[in-house]
Amino acid sequence: MVHFHREKFVTHGGPDGGDGGRGADVILEVVPTMNTLSVFRHQTKYLAPDGKKGGPNNMSGRSAENMVIKVPPGTIVYDRTADKFLGDLIGPGQQLLLAKGGRGGRGSQHFATAHNQAPRTGEKGEPGEEFVIRLELKLIADVGLVGLPNAGKSSFLAAVTNANPKIADYPFTTLEPALGVAAIDEDNSLVIADIPGLIEGAHRGVGLGFAFLRHVQRNRVLIHMIDGLAEDPLADYTQINNELALFDPKLGAKSQVVVINKIDLPEVQELMPGILKSFKKAGIKVMTISALARTNVKDVLKKVQELLQQAPPPEPVEAELPIYKPDEDRYEFRIERVPDGWQVSGKGIERAASMTFWEHEGSVRRFQYLMKKIGLDNALRDAGIEEGETVFIGEFELDWQD
Ligand SMILES: Nc1nc2c(ncn2[C@@H]2O[C@H](COP(=O)(O)OP(=O)(O)OP(=O)(O)O)[C@@H](O)[C@H]2O)c(=O)[nH]1
Ligand SMILES: [Mg+2]
Image 1: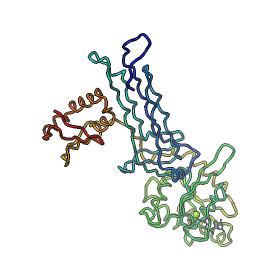
Image 2 (image 1 turned 30 degrees about the horizontal axis):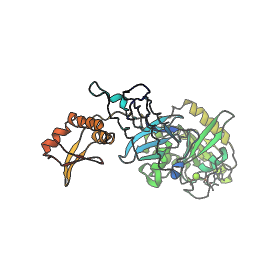
Image 3 (image 1 turned 60 degrees about the vertical axis):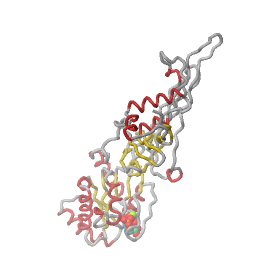
Image 4 (image 1 turned 180 degrees about the vertical axis):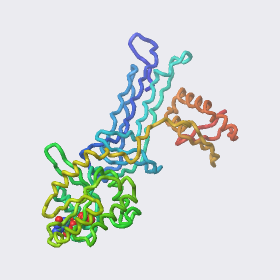
């Protein structure tokens, strides 16, 4: 605000225009109860409010309240335009500062000097930041269900959790990873991810393998489900483990509960002694269950819990949150000859132009001073600018008077 102090009996009050309030920051925050990004289908644009204007009597405007956008745990944030990773949001309450609100413009109170006691100048608020972002969700489940298609992974999830996945007698029934929550007791529950069936070549992306294996990276313990009806269960087991290890050695090293399913079927019961023998020979401990009849399923959860207690905590896939730093070359600029004048571009100078009140002489003088200080003046002269030509800076047009 540009304002002069006015009081009865005070003839010449000093400048007393207050500062503007700062604009709101846009912040992403993890809310543990969310588990999809579906809200962003409906709302795709978020505009944080401006700060309030400054008032007379040096009254600063109120800063705007920050805008907090809720996201589920496991959200990965990219700057879409630059295709740059911005952050990985995992823990409850974790925040990522996306766009900083602009600083409020300084009011006229700041512009009085020994020479100019009555400055008719103020400053506009700093422009805020604007971003196009891309959000990706990596499900965070402590436990992942892996195995070949049709092994009975979704049936197991349905047996032990509140989830209601599609189950069918053909491979590739599950097309997208999904979560279920298994209640262990009053205080404890396990989040289990049903991963679509993995096939040979999954580590190279076959059968959408990349998309699925990325989810498995976040799991701390795996339930490896094997179809008791398979021709060679041990070969199936080896194949899945190969795919895991080829995609990421750390995946291959995760603890597993190996489970042979469908023991309710008489054929499987007949095959079982042979199956158990082959696994024992290979030194692999297995559990046997029926997801359909819910036989032994609770024992699997108990074993999983035991392993979870020993498993390392989940590690973020990308290491750290980025830290916002001021641009080092804020006032770098470029000059270009254009048909009707000279185009000056540069983030800092464009920002300064947008913060200038062109109708106030003092504000314009400040801008001119900046042009001189960063060498833009001389650069334009060197480039051959002539009296009366137009200089374009951002959306502004200035007349060049030497
Ligand atoms: N008899 C019997 N059939 C089962 C059992 N578990 C699963 N099935 C059957 O096996 C078939 C595949 O089960 P799903 O749970 O869909 O298998 P999945 O591993 O999720 O399969 P994909 O999603 O395709 O990878 C279905 O017809 C199930 O009814 C079981 O314990 N006993
Ligand atoms: Mg399934």
